[in-house]
Length: 403
Ligand code: NAP
Ligand code: MG
Image (cartoon, rainbow, N blue to C red; front, top):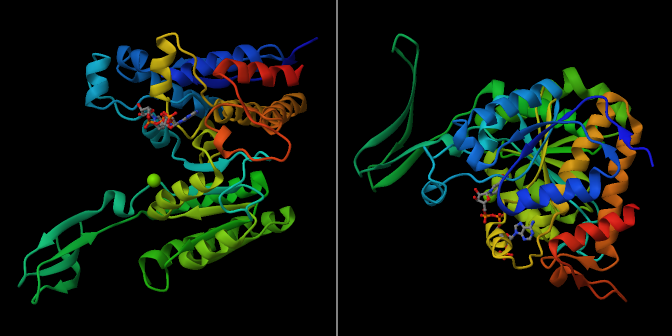
């Protein structure tokens, strides 16, 4: 059988622990037998990040910019315990944070649906894809406690230090209290808006965006205005041609509509809303092992990954020679997402078709009752008794279907 050829490489970012083990097996069992795989390889495992003073992460992100498409394995974000465990030179920053800063992107998270794994909200028949703005608001807020009798103001200075605006936040004459100040940047909101509009066109799903602009008449309203202006000028015609709509509504209305919907929506959220709602949506769909994630930059770079971490507990079992049953589905979908995008950009439909086929084989394996342990308690299908497979056996079962 002749293998599928690739015109350009994808940027391959290897990672840590159990997901690093799965990474190798996924390639061996599911990709290399079918595709003449071209990648530019970067080892983002913690050992190599430390060895290169984290330069490898920066190089990988720049390569992702050059080749447009990357696929990333989960990586350890070091804390004090990891510094000790790996004898690190320093507590390196989160690779995802570094890559996000260099690509200037928005993260979209989407659940993988399989019959038998029923969402906690049974009306959800299609994926809800969540886009979270990853800059500003309360995540870079400034806050303090205020003593009774004091006043808190919001001040704006020009570059010479002259006060151009002074607003009373609160006169704390009757009680101690707290005060908080948050900000955002037009540039960041604009790039978030463009990433969302582009991604909606990419996946052909309607886009919903919501804030609390009735209450926050300057701050949240500004988000609404920026989205509206960019949509009107740059995307309205494209959305009409694609037969999808852009809807703005209030955040509480959006939450109610999402719960009542059947899914099939791209839901754009401000930073805090996205933080909270992405955990709600992921949990309601069933399992972190079935959640994919893609970073999309406004200038059209894509980085695909699983939404979960390196599954440390399973890795230590693996090291002791014990069997593990770690869900590889989200990592498989990171690969298929990257290969399909590569195929689309390079005009190699065989590669896109392969990616679709591998996704189908993966989902059908679960639907037929063969799955990793995390999914067994979630699986309910008439006449199918779920069977728990170990990590490698699940991949072999998918490979069997591919053949
Ligand atoms: P985690 O690796 O996502 O795992 C947390 C728990 O969730 C696991 O112990 C396991 O539960 C379950 N789980 C997650 N993914 C699973 C899968 N594919 N199959 C089966 N079960 C799965 O999160 P963590 O333990 O908080 O973090 C571990 C490391 O990952 C940390 O060093 C962190 O920095 C890193 N991390 C990286 C990324 C990324 O690169 N994108 C994201 C998050 C965390 P049971 O133990 O109950 O089986
Ligand atoms: Mg959260």
